[in-house]
Length: 75
Image 1: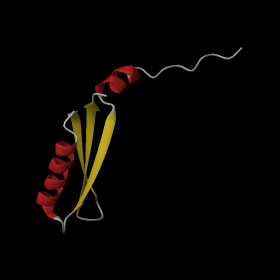
Image 2: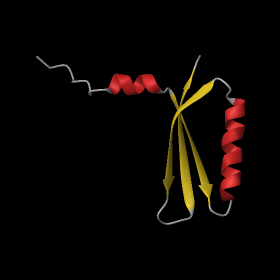
Image 3: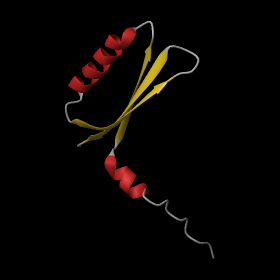
Image 4: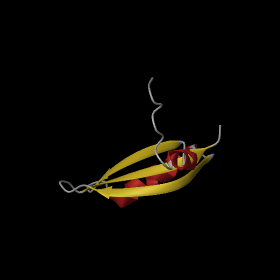
């Protein structure tokens, strides 16, 4: 007899927070204005998306940042 796999605590709560992820990479040469414009353009094309969380990560090796949007989009 095999035991059923154990669910990770809180996984259902996390899954209910967002149902999509969009990632934007911005290099130093493009400048922050370019990155902001790309994000605003994406949001304007996806008006039913509600951004739930944002993570900004800076690369150690290059002048690059990654902006990760976690969002909820109604079907």
